[in-house]
Length: 278
Image 1 (cartoon, rainbow, N blue to C red):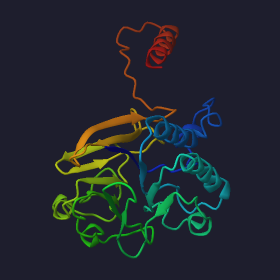
Image 2 (image 1 turned 30 degrees about the vertical axis):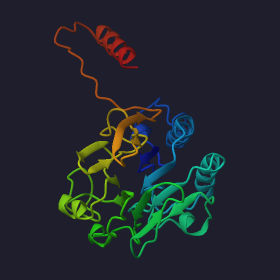
Image 3 (image 1 turned 180 degrees about the vertical axis):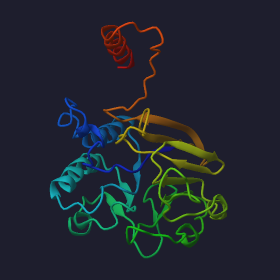
Image 4 (image 1 turned 45 degrees about the vertical axis):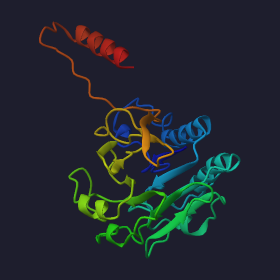
């Protein structure tokens, strides 16, 4: 019946951390990796002809003042606008205080949610209700989920929320909530942001972290991307697929050096292992 993309934590123009410490690392070459990941996200939305896109917070990384970052984002949103694809966004802890978010107007297809209370947007042509609230500041400690509206009847209800979900050990605690809090709203899908590891917490209802589209440091291993979600005529999720978007991928490589006889052999083994990984 319809489809959408669930993404989060783009951290647009955030540098990939740690590379500058290593001589010869291609820092400049991959500095634009987060931009290219966003381009990949938009291309995926266009190719799959999705009906809308969700971004669950941390579009920007900190209190950025470079308007070129936001102008780049706007240009990508214009690609979606040309195909009449709306985008629903909330602010997270990293972009809560963003100067450019507050002062630069986004294209008309980008719907940003309020910061002081949760709000509901009804899709104009689909039986979809999207509920959300952005961070008013960079350190929201209260449970935002409890203030979300009740599910709209006869619609596919989506909760757009940036949260650590009862204090995940992977990231700092922001807007913590419990699974029971989310269940109480009777939504069919919770599109979460903040935790960078893509993960499906559960499927009934769907409670999902999309992870970030581009890994930014060595402990953000493996493929990074978004989820492509398809919903059938019964307003049930019929397909839920992870789609990779990253252009630089972090990995831990293990090499058995127990029988290495010389530095030259070790270098050859390392080189060969890298070639296989690539």
